[in-house]
Amino acid sequence: MSPTLTRRRTVAATALSAALLAGLTACGSGDDKPAASGTGSAAPSASAAPQANLTVLAASSLTDVFKTAGAAYEKAHPGTKVTFSFAGSQELAAQVKQGAPADALVTADTKTMDGLKAETGDAKIIAKNRLVIAAGKGNPFKIDELKDLADTKLKVVLAAPEVPVGRYSKQILDAQKVEVKPVSQEPNVRAVLGKVEMGEADAGLVYKTDSAKSGDKVVTVEIPDEQNAVASYPAATLKQSKNTEAAAVFVAWLSTPEAQKILQEAGFQQP
Image 1 (cartoon, rainbow, N blue to C red):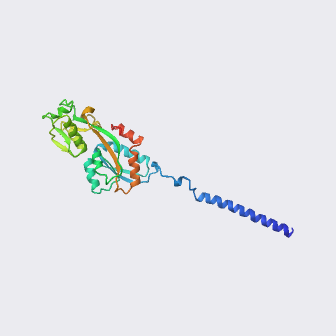
Image 2: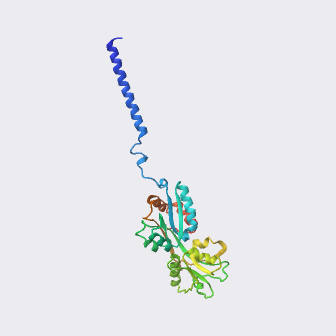
Image 3: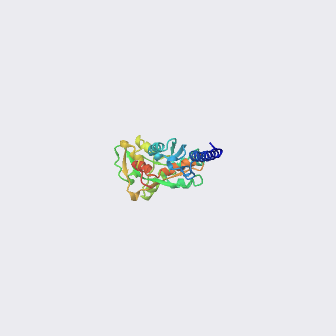
């Protein structure tokens, strides 16, 4: 082989090797670094919310439905745990003002939530409710309407006036000029219902959703819409939360079709 031919083959081999190396380098960089326009730069969806242990302060009347809702939320958001603390809305407000370690708040009225604007994010109504008369088992006193509660022979129990359901109760009784002297004033709606269920009271004013959960322990007496009050349930994140993003995703979820279906199946009305 001539020296000239040898030099030509050497140059060609060198060029081919360089081309192959460049191609391999290009392929390697594509595997190691995702493109800037790929999913890595997209905003996380609700289902991709950060995992967290959330604590939610919620009104007593949400006790049963939120247990169901919480389980559904955890199933849809693996790795997230939701713990609820239930109490009267006024008690929850006091806990928030005292800096209780929590991430979100749901009250049974807008007045309580409005008083916490410095401690919460923007609130949104997630459900509504109405009042009913819960009469003792079998309704032995034949209670049919609000004015029947004025009978002095009856033992009527109400929520305290600073409690949302107590405030709604006073509102509708005053509007109908019905004077009731309660045998006790309770700290939340569940306590009112419990007194009637145990026979310690003949009747009480509670939310429709609570009375419905009592089965045959009480008799539910409907109150006409024109004599009734509508309870609104606002939800908001707490500024003191250490899980701000996860808390915001949970609060937003409460307005989704899935959560609304759970609330409405429990008797709550649409926001």
